[in-house]
Length: 574
Image 1 (cartoon, helix red, strand yellow):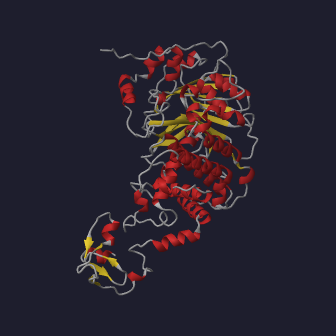
Image 2: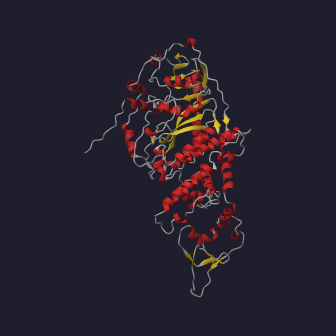
Image 3: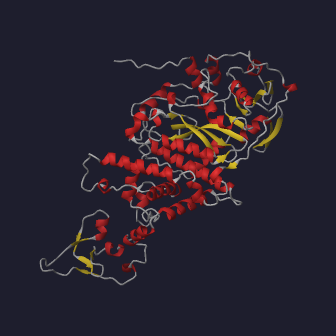
C-alpha cells in the first residue's frame, strides 16, 4: 500500500503562505482538468484542508524564518516626527469619452463597445462552427437549428444576463415559462429559450485554434481578451480619488480548476481570486489581476529580481498612479517598511495594517508588551510603525500619520483609538463596497459549468457597477442601483431587439393572461368531434396536454378554434 506524501513548505514558501493573517490557510492545488463540466466539491481540496492546521499567530511568527534587522532604518521616538501627506494633483471622476455622458445605455456601451462585442460574436460563431462540424446530432437537437449569432442578439443576451440578476429564478427554464406564477414576458418576447441556450452554449472569447500563438497567461487563454479589454476601459474612462485601496476578491467556483483558491474568511470560500485596486470612496474597480498561481504575470518597471510576490502585485496595480499624490490603503498581506519607503519615494502615501514579522519592523515596537489602550510608535523618516493594544495588539504602518489619538464611538461607548486606525477603517473598504454592490444583483448563476463563463459574468456585473458610478458622477441627481439596472436592461432591449420579430413572437405565443387573443374574449363551446367519412368516432390530440408533454387523445373539440380539447380542465385552461 502506497504511503501518502505531504508537501513540505520551504522557508520562502512558508513566509508567503503565512503572509496574510486573515487568510492564513489559503492555498493552491493543481489539477489537469481545468474546464470540468461538473460543479462539485473537489475531494483533493477537502483532503488538503483536513491536513492543514491553522495555528495561533504567535506560534506561526515564531517559526517563520524572516530577517529581523533594523540596518536600513534609523528608528526613533515620535517627538520630532514631521511626516507630511502627499499633495493630490489630479481631478478624479469620468475621463475621456465618459465626460458628460448623460444616457445610461451609452455609458454602458463605453465599456462594452460594438467592436468588443463584435469580437465576441465572431469567436462565438467560430466556436459554434467548430463544434457542429463533424458531429452527428439527434433529429430534434436544437444544434441543428443553429444560425450565426448577430451583434444585436449578443447585446440582447447580455441584457438578459443582467435581468437575471434582478429577477432571480431557480432554473433557466423558469425564465421562459408561460405558467402564470413564473411568467416573465421580457425573456420569451425577445428570444426563444432554445436560441438563448444555444448562444450561451457556444459563447466564446478566443479562438481555440490560435492557442499556439498566444502570449498571455496560459490558464487565462479562454477569457484573456475580455480581461485585457476591460482593464484598459476601466482605467481610461475614470480616474480615482486620492484614496485608493488594494485587496483580494473571490468569484465563487467549486468545480475543478488548477488555480482555484480556498480563502476561509471570504463568503464564497472557494473560487477564482483577483487582486483589485478600487477607489476607496465609490468602489470603482480601476484595475485587477486574475491570480493563476506561479504563472501570474506581474509587470512593472519597479519590480526587481528580489522583489517578493505581494510587493510585485502592488507595483503592477499602482504604477500608473504613482507621483500623483494618492494614498494607498492595504492590509497586512501587502504592507512592509520596504514597500512603504518605495511608494513614498514615488510620491504615493501608504497606510495599512502590518505583520510584525516583516523585515525592517523596529524591534522596540515588536517586542514591547502593552496594556489595553496603550500605544507605542516609532518612525524612520516619514515612515511610522505603531502598535496599539485593543483586545489583541493591532500594528499599523503609515507614511504621514503620527501617534495622535481620536475618540471613536462604538456601541454607545467612547473609545480612544489612534487616528491612523480610524482612518484605515474608513478608507480600506473600496473593494468590499464593490463586492457588496455586485452581490445585490448577482449575475453569476450557481450552475454554470465553465469557470470562464462565471468570471465573464462577474466582470460584466462589475462593468455595470462602474458604469453606474460614472453615470452618477455626470448627473446632478443620483440614480439608485436598482433603477439604473432596470433602465439599462430596458434600454438595451429597446435598442437591440428587432421590434417586428418581437411582435410576431408575442402574437404567435398563446398565453392565458393575454386578453387580446380572440378565443379569450369570444363565446366558445365544447362539443364532440363530428364523424368523418373514415371514422365514426374521430379523435384528436388535446392541445393543452400536448403542450404539457402529455399524449392524450380526446373526442371533444372547440369548433371555433378547430383544436382538440379534454372536456374537463383543459377546455377551461385553454
